[in-house]
Length: 134
Length: 114
Image (cartoon, rainbow over all chains, first blue to last red; front, side, top):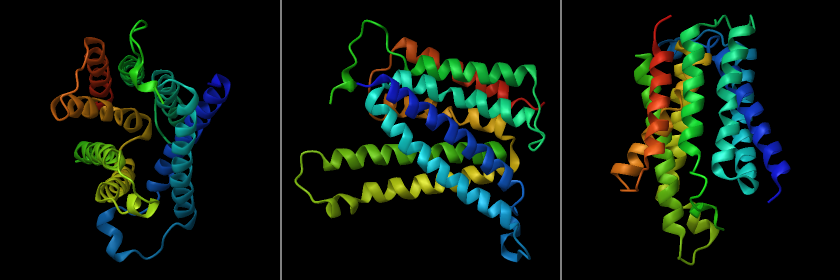
């Protein structure tokens, strides 16, 4: 077990998946809705490039995630991944590019979701971790 | 409609994960080459549903703010827990149900129109 390597890969996965989600949102709001797909005159080339890059980043984040799981227990890894919920919310609300906003109920919602994901994935301290066997 | 799409994205992703589980289980204990493994119908279903889930997710992002839609994707954990409990009959402890309740509470808050 090499914990530092595991944490590095998990944080890499967090950064990649957050960038992927923001990129997908940015590009999808600039691409036509499905009911217009049959008669599209012109596609925003930049948005198309960004959505493809975002899907690539998303796939890469999954590979980083798998690499992280070699060194970290699942509970620890999910606790790190839940950072991406806060990161995407904070960035989307603070960057003017996205036109999204903060609110108390949304912030509380994100916090509850993070707490829930961490709770779901932590084992009680004394229970043996059956699934971490090779 | 947006909520329906979000649920569809979650359902497809879960289907993909369950299919992955079956694919891995079908490989276990059988002598097979890589080509045989790749031809497993469960793997095909997994790839199709994960791809479909991604496509539906892109449509969700045309309608919902990513700052709230992305955390709502954690409904996946709730769905997977229900499938583990009621389809695979795995035991779920009280702590796990508490996590499910927290995630659901958060998703309800995020779903409030602001």
